[in-house]
Image 1: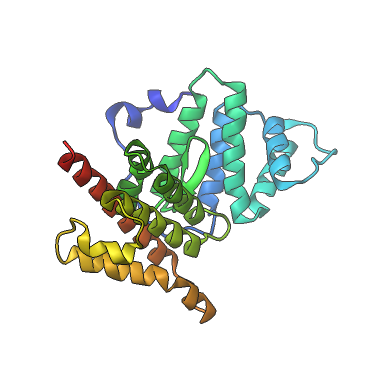
Image 2: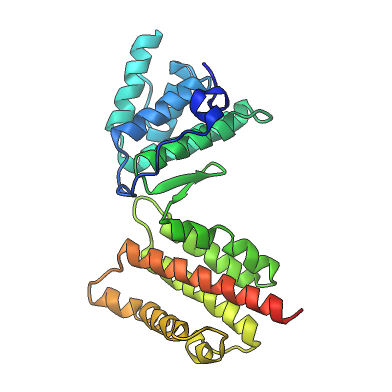
Length: 269
């Protein structure tokens, strides 16, 4: 079978437009099929796929199935019946297996690239990065968070970098994202960056007015800080933050942090 790099669409740069993200807590048939077909196309036999699927699903292979066709039907049945979050576990395990089989080759990259294309085409709110399934947000979320942890670390703010990294882990948890944890860690990252800019140890709420934020951006950040500070109270009242609210907080905290880092680097020259 030809690789993705030699296909007509890859050579000429054609791809389906990204669909609106509508799927997070599900693995629709199109994605289950895509993961299986990618595994087969990159060299796994039905028995090899069965070994991986059974390991992920904690199921014993059917000893009555020996030839390829019955084994393939067994694999398809296991994948069709699996809980949605196990499908993304399977996607990660396949990447790991490809790395073990093709550690110096290109198959892991091909697998990740084609899987991410399928996620985008079918509106799946997940992506694979270096073999790990992480949340895929809006375009603004992707742009704001893509480089924020690295920029924080490069700017001498490792604690802020770790907090933002933890926020991204929390919002990517399966089967339920830790939206409260994501909000708290993202705002903690912004607070660390703000303290570094000010050279003080105050809370973000007390620092905001002294940060070089254009108005009314300073008031927007102040309200964001208030929203994040209220999350514990909201939980006691039985109102969990929505995923979209957490995405907004993480996006804004990352963007404002990067802005402050860039302003400080410019003024320090």
